[in-house]
Image (spheres, rainbow, N blue to C red):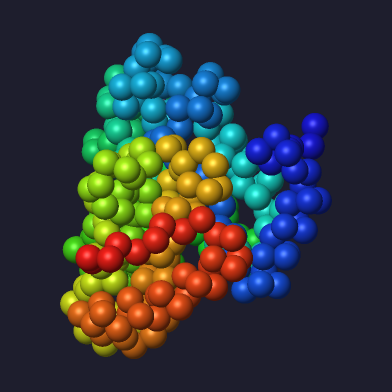
Length: 301
Ligand code: ACM
Ligand code: ZN
């Protein structure tokens, strides 16, 4: 049967949405987060679970990485990639995840251990490196780009894979030095799901604290000009576990996205927060007209 997206859209509608975004200079990037963060997929497809794991209980305790030894896993991922290729035009990036992977379940799984022997390796990291490389090759063979989180940048994966550095500048610099193109998305400055102030009136969020001033004050990693040419841009992440409607997403995004945009696209001074504030005040008037539910700037800040 034909897939539906979010239970709402057909494949054809997805193609139209993606093309419309493109016409507005927006590139939509799908992420398949593997091999960790895969609890939902493992629930739906039991043959992705390692031997000896007491699922679903243990899945909730961090053993939510798919099995690296069962052939079903690669077949499943290739299926998902094929579906993405059916809706995203060639040249699109496809994000392959690889953040926060627990190798716990792989230690005792006979499929994973057999796979490790086949690879002639002893370190469990070899399992995820080999898995990543196979998927990245599969993604790229029709002209798509592969992106991974910075944990995978440590796997000695091939250098054409883009690394998205969420854990901070040190991880970004390490990936650049290994030769990867890098996108900077540090959770210290650009996680817009974190609180914007410590006021008790803030809507419930996942945690953290990143006020507007902090977003604007982001300093780039120290890199040589040649290394810096590997940096492709800045990105904010806005995970939506706690953001149950679009109004909340807008509240968390704005005005912080204004600060990100200036830092990413102009030569502004990150210490001149005051002049940014005056431009942001004008931009917020525009957002007001567009009925965007932004968070008003604090008087004091
Ligand atoms: C991430 O926030 N785990 C990418
Ligand atoms: Zn396994």
